[in-house]
Amino acid sequence: MALAAGLIDLGFALFHAAFRRLFGWPERLTPSGGLNTAITQTLNAMLIFVFLAYGATLIWLAGQGRVHPVLPLVGATFWGLRLTLQFIWFDLKPWPSKLITAVFALAIVIHLLAVKV
Image (cartoon, rainbow, N blue to C red):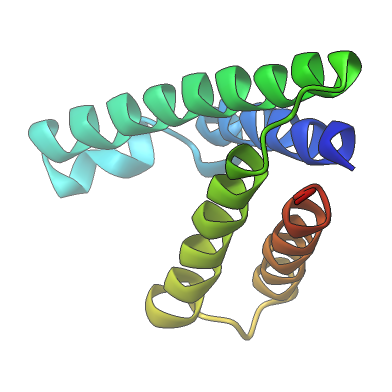
């Protein structure tokens, strides 16, 4: 299950890499100001790196049978926080929001199933 957890994290790296195209960045960020535009794009780039590093580490360790339970537990906590923030800051009425909310919940479950105590 750690392999599946790593793959979902790599999938989110690809999803975030597509934000420029999907959301019309940086043009659609421009009204928020130059600093906010720079911060948003920088945070997204850093998040892509985190997803790549974390997902690749899970996959690599899963292949060696050496996944420490803390690693997927941290991932489940990350996705739990992200799911919580989805309900606080996002409109859940559009179907894409409902879909991504379900994927966040799935990510939690997959990471929790990867925890071997």
